[in-house]
Image 1 (tube, rainbow, N blue to C red):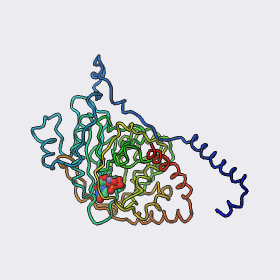
Image 2: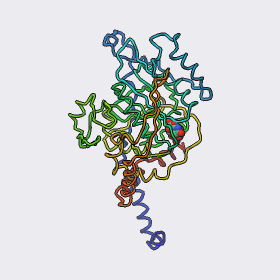
Image 3: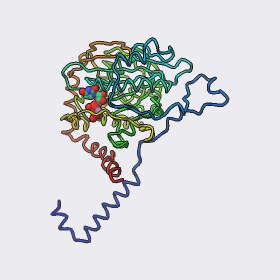
Image 4: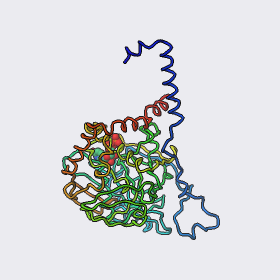
Length: 418
Ligand code: UDP
Ligand code: MN
């Protein structure tokens, strides 16, 4: 290539350079971000002078009651201390957590019913830090919620995506949640005004992580803390989701009538999260660390959702330090072929043989779902599908464009300079 370039006359080289720079400028001016920063102000109102809002009975938040909180990342209270402080008999009844880690405001009607999903294995210290912070914050935000800790047992590699899918299926057996928060156990929110509710987008709450020097890692990043609701209006209509032997066609009417749709799925769950269903949940094939968040980002983009984030001043998180896991080998291969698997690999692929619930327990501070995951025959087919799609180069161009879209290097290097 370089030899070829050397053969071009000098004037031609300048021309090529100019063309290259023009392309860059063109790309920069035509870059349209699908990411929006939005204040959670819809839920936060200055206290109405005439009490009109109060009469409506809906929960509104007082701006001045929600502040940046100091976080002690080195000392996590013991579990029994936490249980006494948050759910013990001395706690006033209105503030006391119910078994299973649930709470709801008693003197106003909450806007949504929220499930916080934490995929978990062997991170007790992180969990205690998180619970200590999360419950206090969510109560201040007047949110009706339950915290689910979906714990993977057995020797298999950790599978965050599949745990989240299982969590949603199991949670919907308990109540018809409107809004799901997919939360890393090591992300401790700092600002009480980062409201844990859904909007019509894929809302990414972790805009600013201390580890990333309080900046977004890249525009399409949807890791750490992601919010997906059932509230959004469908933007595209032509998805078929196969559940057991039946094929359901998702149409706008279907979605608007499906506040509580009972699927005849192998897990026999009542499911109601429109957005999560629209994208078919997380992929199940990422065993180990890496790429499952890229996959869900691609799915939300495909479904026409924007990404909304709180401003950097509000979406602040401290990350608990831990040794970095090694990236799995097949991660990129699967990600490159995400489109080929999209409709087959996700919520609708949870089969009887792919997971076993070891126990469901209503602990004082959370609902624990212990689950053993296994590689099903269906998943092996997905692996095969990824490899074939790569061989046929179906998704290679897709991958290249997506990685450019990340703008990570460009964006991140700017922050490194300034
Ligand atoms: N996780 C866990 N135990 C593990 C690995 C992962 O509980 O052994 C969960 C935990 O919720 C964690 C998330 O998966 O926050 C993401 O994994 P990790 O923190 O290793 O990845 P990072 O995002 O920090 O690179
Ligand atoms: Mn982490």
